[in-house]
Amino acid sequence: MGHSQKVIDEVIEVVKKRDPQETEFHQAVLEVLGSLKPVIEKHPEFVKAGLLHRLVEPERMIMFRVPWHDDQGKIQMNRGYRVHFNSAIGPYKGGLRFHPSVNLGIMKFLGFEQTFKNSLSGLPIGGGKGGSDFDPKGKSDGEIMRFCQSFMNELYRYVGADVDVPAGDIGVGAREVGYMYGQYKRLTMLYNGVFTGKGLDYGGSLGRKQATGYGLLYFVQEMLKDNGKDVTDKKVIISGSGNVATYAAEKAQEMGAHVLAMSDSNGYVYDPEGIKLDTIKRIKEIERKRIKEYVQEHPQAQYYEGSKGIWTIKCDIALPCATQNELDEESAKILVTNGVWCLAEGANMPSTPEAIKTFKDNGLLFAPAKAANAGGVSTSALEMSQNSMRLSWTFEEVDAKLKDIMTNIYSRVSQAAAEYGRPGDLEVGANIAGFLKVANAMMAQGAV
Ligand code: NDP
Image (cartoon, rainbow, N blue to C red):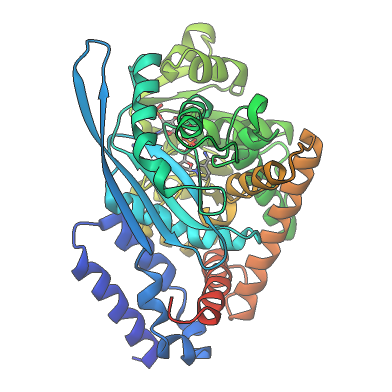
């Protein structure tokens, strides 16, 4: 075994030993470091400077108590997190997730991924992530507001327009960002865009809501173009029915694809005539109900319990846009048997390592999350620019910049893959290109 591989294995071992229970974080570290051998071989100075050991340890991890009153007047308690992972190339930037599964390992995996994604975006933003094990499902508007205010009563100390700028993620949309931003303003008297994904009336950017989903399709389009294919008339399935899934579906339909199925954490709907997005938007964004309601209005569609079943539907392109590890080896094999030839990740780390191996072994066009879903954070950075300049761009301006950014990410990633002897392997390309910029910045800044 070469020296570089030994160094990488040693770092992975330290990570596992230090926090043995953080399995999602281990998985993310393994995925990135697994691609870095040729880079380490070329740059022995990184090893000498202990760079990999520093890279896998967050700069700072903040954990705090979030007490809040429910509608019965009872005090409830959740745990809040903010992980400041890496600020080598800019202020910490990354979403907040409210979901009962949230724990420190999940926050760290997301913050680690975010560091490389933000680097790939080409914009000056570092990596961070946060959230809470609070479950927004079934809570009243008042409960959501009181939770968000209490969460901010602590988090406000650690964020700032040039320090850390959070955004939304699972369970955090415009409503939650509004409540948190309002509380931040009360506490600090500052009107500086410390959140992105804000409402349009108070500093939000046109196009931010659509950005992750649209960006995913712009990336897919580039990848397909490079391989002599396109999206038009292709059969697409999209897991999830939240922010990313909805706008991925919208752009896919605009590009002429047939979106046949979408899901939530309870089950999925299959509509042979193509998913009617207006219905999905109303059910999920406005009424905050379950996706199974869809079939009440569209009797030609079928609803099935269990979200995993969505991967059994025959398609050309599959877009996992719900959550981590939602697509395992078994599902990957079914997809392949049914003829899928393109898989692009809208969610963060949605495919298990075994699923990714199945895709690669079968020659799929595979777009990894940290490149393919970078449109959201990139447009967040555009929101930050507009806030600093005290102006707002039109939807068309933002969308054109987003398209440009995704095209550039695709070429950066495919070039890196080719340069390091793995042409077409966008997973390796994304890891290497994302890593190099952060590593060079860390080297330049000394022992940070
Ligand atoms: P939303 O909360 O808007 O939507 C999440 C969707 O995924 C919902 O349909 C939800 O179903 C489903 N889901 C959540 N948890 C699970 C689970 N454990 N099993 C099955 N389905 C689940 O979140 P987003 O759309 O914002 O985020 C989706 C993914 O995209 C996440 O991985 C996120 O990190 C990633 N991402 C988001 C970005 C953004 O800009 N929002 C940017 C880049 C990445 P239900 O309603 O039943 O909970």
